Figure (spheres, rainbow, N blue to C red):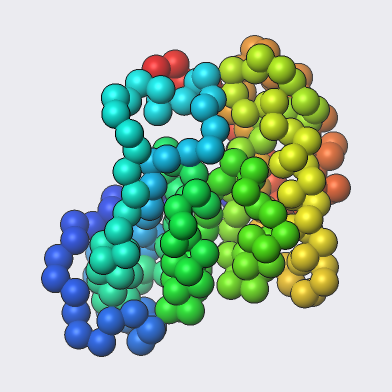
Length: 220
């Protein structure tokens, strides 16, 4: 069955503890209310402009997380009993942030399982190698069709480059004999692309997909 990510609230930021990142997550105490996953939206910028995206309703330019904020969040995450996963995602594309490769490695080296949601366009050879070596535990890629589709409401017109990038990632996993990252397609369903879902399911083994997560198209 497909993996369904859990939904937990992002804690407020307080002062950074002594020691900082790299000491490993704190062991949980039985009976505590334990946060399990930290969601980090490191940018609201994106390399796509999808017709259905809520970003079209936002005025002004996007924003990016600073190194200071990331370091503070990671340091605090290490002090949260039970927190085991750092998830890079949000309305922006994490890979457009210039510090993302370094932050990905820092989160993994600190002992966290790392998750990533991406549109897959920047998953080139170098990024694929980073995702395997870190490793990224789970990678979710937006994929709304099983063929090129022009004038689509979602991400469907980028199928060919994303296909190539997923095949590249699959090859990197084989070279390193790694089962990570697990890869899941995020399929936004509408009347115009619902028939594509069955073909995408057929292609899933060739793309190295562990599952397909389906959501409905939400109008903004």
